[in-house]
Structure formats: C-alpha cells, structure tokens
Amino acid sequence: MKFLDSAKVYIRSGDGGAGSVSFRREKFIEFGGPDGGDGGRGGDVWVEAVDGLNTLIDYRYQQHFRAKTGVHGMGRNRTGAKGSDVVLKVPVGTQVLDEDEETLLCDLTEVGQRVRLAAGGNGGFGNQHFKSSTNQAPRRANPGLPGQEKWIWLRLKLIADAGLVGLPNAGKSTFLATVTAAKPKIADYPFTTLHPGLGVARVDAREFVLADIPGLIEGAHEGAGIGDRFLGHVERCRVLLHLVSAREEDVAAAYRTVRGELDAYGNGLEDKPEIVGLSQADLLDEDERKAKLKALKKAAKKEPLLISAATGEGVEAAQRALMAEIVDARALDAPAPVTADRPWDL
Image (cartoon, rainbow, N blue to C red; front, side, top):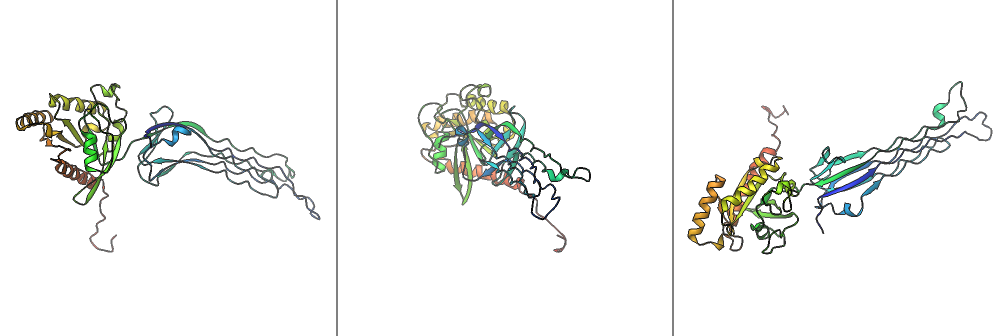
C-alpha cells in the first residue's frame, strides 16, 4: 500500500427536507385541518480515527463526500427520515485543518475519536405548525435549511514512541529492519527511503513503536532534498535516535547539519530527548572509532553509542536506551493515581 500523509477533501452535509402542505381528509370528519409533517434533518459529515490504517491513500481516489438530504415531510403528520451520515475513516494521528492549511479543526490521537465536521441542515416545518385561530387552513410550509460545505485538509502525523533521524544513508532503515519485522528498502544510494516506515521493536519483554524518517540534508527546512515534509511524523515521538554514519569524514559536521534542521523546524523537536549513535561502526578500525567517537561526543555534548546493525554491535544497548526514555515519558503522560486517607474517601 502506498504511503500518503496529506490529502485535500471536499465535504458537504445534507440539506434538510422540506415540510409538507397537507390537509386531513377523511370520511365523517369535518374540518380535518392541516396535517403536513416536518422535513427530516440532513445527514452530518464525521471524521473518525480507526485502527488498522496508517496512510491516507484512500483519499487520493475519492475527494468529494456528500451526506444525504433529509426526506421531505408527508401528510398525516409524517416526519421525514434523517439523511444518512458520511464518516471519513482516518488513521490515528490525523489532523484536520481548514482550507488555509493553518487552522486546526481537530486532532485525532486515539482510536475511536469521532468529530463532526459539518452539521446537516434542519428540516422545514410542515403546515401544521402554522395553524392558528385566525388561520385554520395554512397553505405554507418551510423548506429545509441547506447543509454546510467546505474544503478541508487531512494531514497524518504518525504516532510512534521513537523516531530515527539522520543524513541519507546513515543506516536508519538497516537499524529498523534489524530490530523490527519491518522490511524497508535498503540500498547504497541517497534517499532510498522516500516514505516514513514503522516497526515494533521488542526489548526486555517490552515493546515500542519505531519510526524511520527519510534522510535530511542541509536546507531541508527550506525545501532542499525531500524537505521537511516528513518531520511532522517525529513531532509525536517521545525520543529521537540520531544516527551518524561512520562513513562520514566529519561526523561532527554531519551531526550539526541534522541538529540544525531539527532546531529550524521547531514544533518541539528541539526539546525532545535525543540519543546519539555512531552507526555502521563495523567499517572502522579501533583508532578510527576512538577518533570519531571523540569528535561526535564533542559536537553532541553527550556520550554517543557505537552501533553496527550488520554485526549487531550496540543494537541492544540502543534499544534499552530508547526504552528507558520512553518509560520515563509514559510515566509523565500517565494520569495521577487517586489517593485518599481512608478507603471510603474516594
């Protein structure tokens, strides 16, 4: 299935049904009076986060969604049925924005969240509503109110516990394939990864979701390379694993390039916990390892991990470091437990 993380969609709720003009005409009943029923309400347009989806590709092939019109009222005080609703099913982590792509309408972060985007129009009154002592045979009814229509943007931001960032060919996809069952494309040329990838990693009988983000280059926040299009997918990550390839001549400059792009993008990425790793370490001899680790430590101002996904060196240590940060972040997000001095004071 192809990955798509942004889609523009037209939605329109249903019009309300018209009220009816009708009079009661039965044998042996004199002066039956008006009995026109009300029109039904138009259908609504909803958006719902569902499990089992991780792309918006369905909205590439259908961009227009219209709810049904309410059924018109009928005689004998029969009210029209409500129009059928339309439900846009989207992956968890989808944001709904107005047509200007800036105004946030809702953010669906949990399975089952459901938000009404456009309300259907009310049905019109039948002529029974207009009878009075001076107008006992009204011959008027209200039309239904029109529905709402608008263009909206659906933007997906994957929800993962940890995100992999780095320059192209830093070994991110190889690391993802090593610690999860994901099968990303791996090749020895830049921008092999064109779409974010997800996998579930397991360490010490605990699991976390790992996201592989396409490589960043200098000027990505201004649109260079693939640009910052996919940085939104790491906004929701609890921790970042920043991989710097051992093949880089200047590992410090490589680190600062990606770090600068994260800081320029903002949106909280600059404040996220970061674990730094020197990847593809199996390509270095002992002296080169020491020199590049020292340079990377000076640039990152923290002790980097030595990682080789090909040989498995440092992979488990990186997983444990990520898991430790994730556990701390989950503890902060958890609601505070209810406490009481006595068991009946709850």
